Image 1 (cartoon, rainbow, N blue to C red):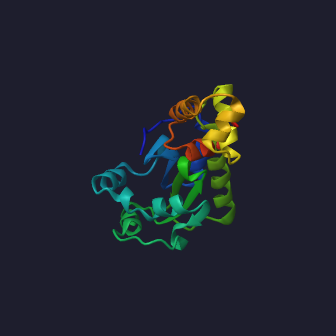
Image 2: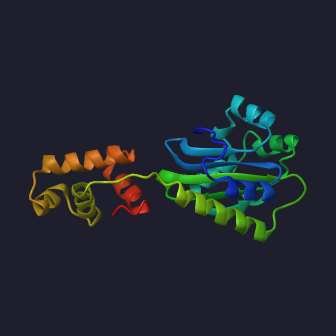
Length: 206
C-alpha cells in the first residue's frame, strides 16, 4: 500500500513506535482506494517479501479488522477470519504478539499493525501506540484548500438541500453548482458528493 517513507519528518514518533514494537510494524496513513498516502515499515524484509508475493493484504485479518473498526485490538482478540493463516505465518518471522490500530473515516482510514516477539502488549503500550497513530493521522491530513464557492456549495448539500435548492440559494444554475461540487471532488480525490463532504469535514474545510 502506497509509498514507503523512511522518515518524512516523523523521526521522533517512529522511534517511539520502534521502541514499543521492537519486532516491527507497518503503518498506512490515510488509506483511500486501497492505497495509503504514507507507509512506514519496520517488519523483517523477508516477511514483507512473503506477504507481498502471496498477496496477503487481500485476506489479512488486521486489514479486515481495521477497515471495519476504529480503536485498538490485540491480534489474539481480533475475532476476524484468517483463511490464509497470515498471523500464523507471521510468527515464523518472530511476529508472535501484536496489536492492530485503526482510526479515521472509512474514506481516509489509517491502519497499523505492531508486533513483539516476547509477550503481549500492555494496556499502556497499546494506549501509547494509539496516541502516536492518532497524532500522525491528524498531522498527515493532506494540505488541501477549497474555494469559498466550493465550500458554500458543499455546506448547502451537507445541510440536506437538493441541487436545485442549493443552486437557488446561491443564485446560480444547477449546472454551475454541479461544476463546483465536481471541482471540489477532484481537489479532494473523492468519488461522490457525500464522500467529498466527509473528507472536507475531516480536514476541517467546512
